[in-house]
Length: 493
Ligand code: NAD
Image (cartoon, rainbow, N blue to C red):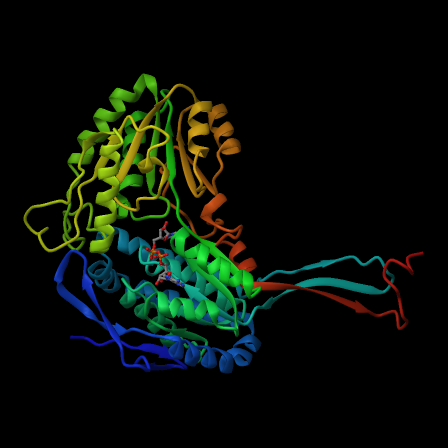
């Protein structure tokens, strides 16, 4: 069995108390990926000390040199994309094509952030006083704690780690317990690319290690991606300690299909949005509002095509949908399906764990579609995070937008229509951080801000230049070259 370690101060080390956890392939649980350290507060403490020791050297390295390290990491990821995709699919389950996309997103992020090493723009501006110069510059925050989920085990860490690095921070990174190997691959690449010891410290484990990061007084910023439940705990603790905290949480994303849309395209988009990554994307399409005129035809076509989706190990080229991540997640998805049936929604297809050759030992679930779903039903209100989507009829765009907004979440939404006036109204009136026109609710690109409104986040945006706002503090600088005391707001004449 392969035994894996934490990475602290540039060395691979065991958890201090020697505890470990096992990681298995969700498509075939007989296959053990390896054992990983189950870390506690004492391991987080060692990681924080390493990050503190490395801070001055890293902070003072010129950003273009930092950018070069990040660029090298991106090039290494590109070189190893195929090899890593196979390892990550074995660990996380999604089909190879999507795992390649996960790594590609990290590569894109590396290239994008490496260039920031020669920008990190501040502003120069005027002063109200004579012979005085004013500007604002970005400063690092210090030691950052990064806590990530399992559904994008390389892309999401890259969204946090690369921008945190270019801004001059050092960090403690705790990946999800379901995808520790993917995190290790990412950290190895950065170490090989020349990142000095202690700048990035990897601490494996579960809630205990995550909570120790959030609590640690020397950690000045916590960047968290995961569920609203845990995000709320993180926010409360950071709030009490007056720590910076950026949260990316759940979604209940919706697609609207108007009668004037290209229906085939809308069905194709809905299938990809709902069942891509087995529905385990924060941007997954879990609600679809269809104009009445085309509702029956849309339901027929969606169901026909959902039934044809090939379920299987993500490593097999024919598979279109892999397993859910673990037994608890499959149970959770199934209880939502049962609640949908009990509340009177019409089950059009799926609704059960998938059975058949090659599926016996994995957490497979059938693509599931509910129709006639009412706004008060749990399945259309709560995030399911599985291959389940709900379809409901609407009479107008206004009604559809009102339904889209009738949720506590606000991550992503899509409109399918050929009418540009409707598209503009949807862009203006939908409450979401991301809105797509004639493409599905999934499909972020790294140079645009990523995040959501309402309970999906707390006002920050990852990726693009907005990620720099998470990982840096603004400093205003005034340089007086008058040679005398000038008083702001007083000596203005
Ligand atoms: P989760 O909240 O269960 O876990 C996320 C991380 O938090 C894991 O590393 C976990 O070990 C850690 N954690 C758990 N309890 C903790 C605690 N008390 N203190 C500190 N850390 C703790 O989420 P998950 O099941 O890994 O991921 C699925 C969720 O993530 C979904 O809700 C999904 O929508 C969300 N997500 C959001 C985005 C986004 O960008 N908005 C992206 C991907 C996933």
